[in-house]
Image: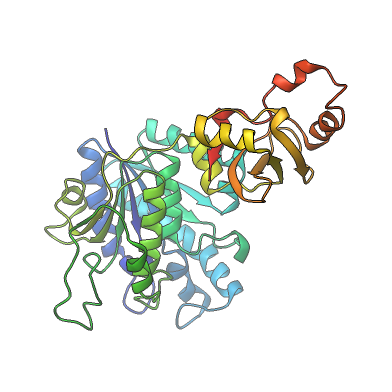
Length: 363
């Protein structure tokens, strides 16, 4: 069984001037139901709450203020999920709503709880529908758009494919709206930095927040998490089932055999926030970088910050260069005491790992 993340943007669900389109929702749910009937596990990341709700507040167009967007999301989220529930109900399929904020991915407990919740829903054949919790999110804790949220979710659940649905049939070597001779990339192993730089960060509609640039950034993040990506459109011949089979109208990025990072190391690499740092000597740096060893107290020369055991710490060389990140088994207070008593303390403590190799990621 393959696990697929499908991300659908506001513009793919909305009427021309805003407001939710029941016809478009049915079109997408029909295709998702077809995937599920073929044995795929599907997680839907759906935008559209603000677009669905702003007219209920009397706005003539999508609000631009934070409070306007959050109020529209508060109304629209219920409308959106109700529409999905009714549409999937035609197939006797049930769905569940998960509203996430950025701190869910930076907090280890919330991160693992989200994973367990998604696993339980999929095990019971319930379709998770994920959206950012726009009604309470603050600027510092937002994903920017649901493209990036879908990339993070794809890594969290070890997806086999991330499908980013848009109104453009893939990535081109130049803007196809400006250059008639623009050529579409059918497949890319990676996204070169110069390609990211050449794609302008513009929005393709008045009801969405993303654009091709945000999708390329999200694709790059998904690739780093070991998940291949499709960016393209759906139509009569390029439905989700055909996309999953490699026949979609768009661009496939990455290798299906990409290695998915272990969940804890993935969290450390992309989401965790360090609360302190450890400076290590040359021997310890070599043991970490070249031999994959744990970090022992004997290699620590300095402790920065105040942190408890099980906290995330950065590991630096004596020159200040960050070389790794990990979860410390020893608090900053206990570690400082060990360093002070380096000569007189019991030798047994020096064999206990400060950061075990299973909880270290190299930077």
